[in-house]
Image 1: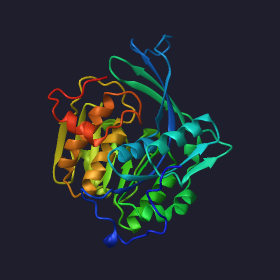
Image 2: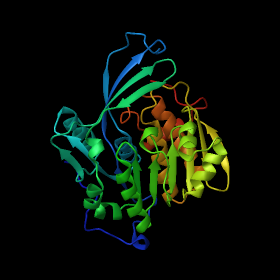
Image 3: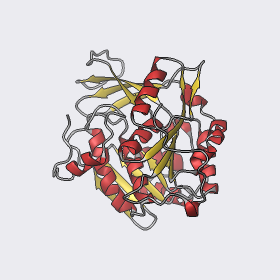
Image 4: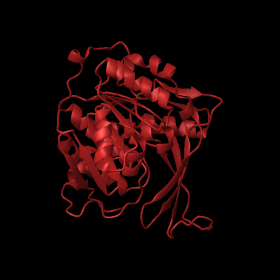
Length: 332
């Protein structure tokens, strides 16, 4: 097991919580899913009903929650992950990968009669477009009771992140706990078929990986209306992604759109989670949303130019190097 970044006895009031600055590690808790991502790249466009031969199958660590945890760890944070895995080969892979990032796994629950999360992804090599499906798994068994058992961990955090590869009732339990104790909370509202609306909230940051998804959840027909509706529900900052090439963000005062500086998209898996994690970390350091997006978009570009959710997460040194690229990150 990795060295522990948290102690459950360390429960502080918001006033006394760890002040994040350049000399201290922010404490991040992620409540979400882990998936072993099985990927096949294809050089020709994918067409329904047509059989194709692609490249070799590759297996990477992934899952929206686990991707956020790895992103935060590589960004220099003390990270804990709350989730579930099965007693199978992919479960062992999950433990090894997350422990290798020095992530606290005290509340990563083993469920012996359920399979570890797995996703199948077909990727068009020329566009980076992916067709992704997640299997029913231990991720679907992450419960509010598990969140309650990790209550002390959540209350010690400077930032909590969750997403909808786990049941929405569990996500709402995390959100409510954070609201009650004034803990900054980031929500990824993907995937689309998990919810059809968003409850009233006080979310620091809400992120959608597609503009269409945001409009569907808010029952609106324009980007501006979707953003306004999300703010009306309580979301302090809103970030919408358009085809991994543009990021539109709003802090209630101003809506801006920025281009993602990447030459070619290799793999979209993990890119949204990378972006939202880096923006959340900037916001708890009291940077503006615009400032946070500048750095986070560079981190996202790095992720888009590499294969694999965990594998593509940058460290801060990678982003410092990327600032000098006038044409953005090249694929490797």
